[in-house]
Image (cartoon, rainbow, N blue to C red; front, top):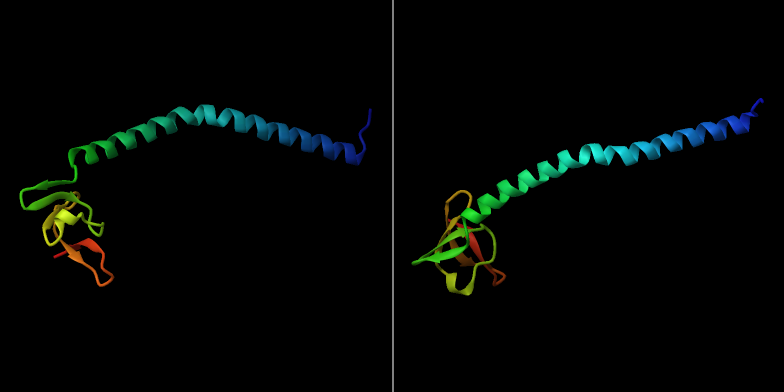
Length: 104
C-alpha cells in the first residue's frame, strides 16, 4: 500500500499532534509534585516572616509598618518602624492630602 504525498503529510501531522498531547498530559504529573512542594515551601517561609511581625501600636510608636503605605488616622505625626529593615519612619501628610509612612 503506497501513500500519496498528501496522505503522508497528514499521517506525520497526526503523529506529531498525538506526541504533543501525550507530552502535555505526562509532563504536569511529573513536574506537579515538585512544583507544589516548592510553592508550599515558599509560602511557609513567607508566612513565617509575616506571622512574626504584625502591624500594631506599641506605646507612642508603631511596629511592623510598610514604608510608603497609608498610615491609620491614629498614627498621624507618629513614628513607626519598618517590618523588614526596622528603619524609622514618620506618618506624614503628602501634598495631595494623603497620609503615608515617610523615611526620616
